[in-house]
Image (cartoon, rainbow over all chains, first blue to last red; front, side):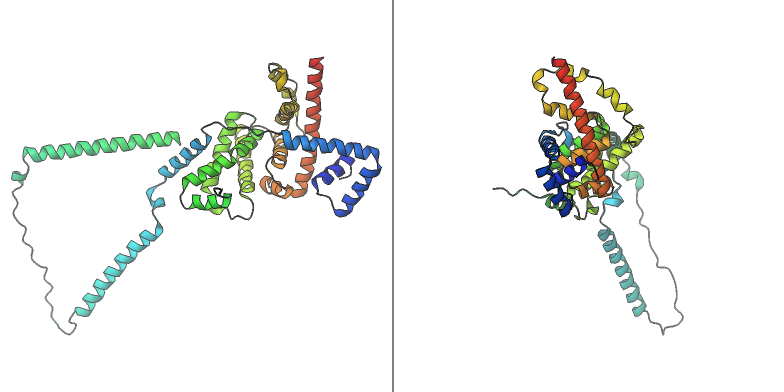
Length: 167
Length: 193
């Protein structure tokens, strides 16, 4: 930082020490060359401050960025968007329920009774006439439901493809 | 009078899920980010891509912004790293400060402003043309200092450099800009004669 230009730029920017500031101030007052250079740099500084222009981005710039953000969020896997607290809450509910049932069972067992007969309970399966249920009306409804599901799945794939392309 | 939210308020709203707040933040900074990207990329298409990338990256990492510096300083550091990555990908040599060969060619080509009428050929026009001819680093430092309302320390933070190095860089960039401006104006004066 020795040249006259450097010293004067530091003086203009206010980045020199108080001692340097004082010395340069004196030089500007007394030295014609310094004064001339100082005025020249000051004018240049003002020109840089006032005349440098910022470029304008395209009209849809903000919209494009927001679209990109939205597309990125849509592509996120579901597990990443589910709040961890919800998962922990569900887990806690099941753990508590199972523990409560276990405790109830353990406390309600008659431990003193010996020779327990461990027989499985008997279930009677009701007789259903399946052939009666599978008439043409039911089959049509079933096929119609399947067709709807297929269309839904196809639409889902097309949407995912388009979102990936725009992202 | 309607209260204009600060950058920090807009960030908090964005973090709470308000996308309109982030859109407002983009509108507020897009001109400067785009200009800065243009200083590195030298063409509008690449600059737009870099600028868009910056805002998306900033959104992704908004939670990591701790407010210790200005939001603009943090954003400009993203612009700088994104632009550098982009340039590296495009294999454009930007790191050598003394290698001006690439830009001499542009400088010696007066066709760009021949077609413009004399009214447009103001000093401001030539100043912006001279900036375009600077090396990306020089153009970025000049833009950050004069238009980004950034101090030397903040520029150092954005460019990941020492404040003293930025001071020297700024001095050299100003000298180069002055020389280029004088050369362009001399060329113009000759044309008029």
